[in-house]
Image (spheres, rainbow, N blue to C red):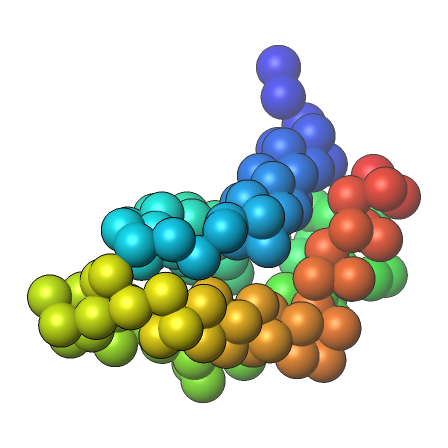
Length: 124
């Protein structure tokens, strides 16, 4: 049986993996689809943690502030529509693809969210 801590850790590790994949994309023509895929994974995992994992089930004091950062990210950042609009026009424009990827990474590092994800994953 998987505990809440193990479940949370597995999700956090998947978030970190997708974030790392975003960092490693080479900004070639067609990479906008890869960016979108990794972004959708991350936002999906953030939604799962925000909606399904109860604060009371995770004893680590770092969890509540991190969950708050996830909600803040979900409320304030949305790149999916922008990518959809951009894809037909600029899918092969490496400069625009790179700019979009960097903006997404910047938003995820806002308030040190990704650093906190790594710290909590290491503690669990």
